Image (tube, rainbow, N blue to C red):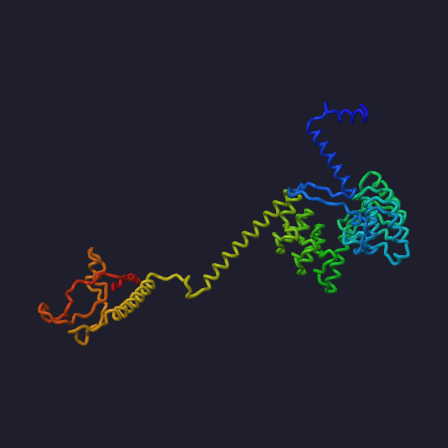
Length: 468
């Protein structure tokens, strides 16, 4: 069926559903509204956000006015890097060869150390790479991870650019920060064949290549040794905030890491991303290095700027061995911390004399209780004197004097089931005169035989009850 026939069949009401008919009708209304609007008529519009409908009139002057001058301008170096990343060879040529760009360095790099030639090799732009090489771009420039343009081209499988770089003197023995030659990370059979031929041409056997791979480690060891001799801070960071310890730990160079730790470097130093040496050792699965860092007191729960801990890195790598090692180290440190805390508490107790933690013998406890009881009695007597110290008619000079009488009614009666409070209260001396006073006793004051007043308050102190 042809296109025309298909359109005719769709237009036929017999073959169209009600939904299709409504959709076609709505579209026709939209086109009619747009036509009226562009003609300058006042047109009503529906508000699809749920508000009220509104009207508008097209004003051509609003849409044809001249644009304002561009206020944001980028330097030529930024434009060059962007043009290389966009494979815009015309702009690359214009920037490097135009009189306005005089003095522009073809080797300018971004925040990761990548030059325009690196970008062209990654993107596979032969034209951009050729223009840059013709304008003195460094064929062996290294970024912050020590990758050369040849590393970048080989890793991306851009073998034609690799041939171009080699013809301009690219170094096939250059090693990146991970200890890799361009051959080690080459993508594709053709790329590896090109590099193998170069190795044969230079007479490099596998043993010689292995020595080259170890060169990075030796270079860092030499740098650390030189810094120690010249008394330069071993915590000095590079442009990315990484210290020599970061480099040693991410590559698993245990000997260099141990040397740095012996010289009191900060084992918890953080780079620009907030990663500690332990973060990098975990990410690159350097098991032995992690144990060395843990023994040196590295923070096992350190967080980077993204709030990620070394354990999160291990989980992201999905490495069971790394996760088990970290858990074991965390548990060990927790156990040691608890044992140390308990030891400190025991020492503090052992070295404290006369403090509340000192244990007392039974004799000392009894003596202390007796002294407390005596003091409480004296206080009770003073308080009773204050409450009952009024002199009554018929009292002699001793009237109002108060004693604390615990007698037989207090001490013995309690054991015989009598009222335990009997005798355990303060009372005045009996100094009144009555007919019923036994011989040898002074008469009692009037009202002495009246019933005792109801108890209003009880204050317990040290086992004694003072009844007022």
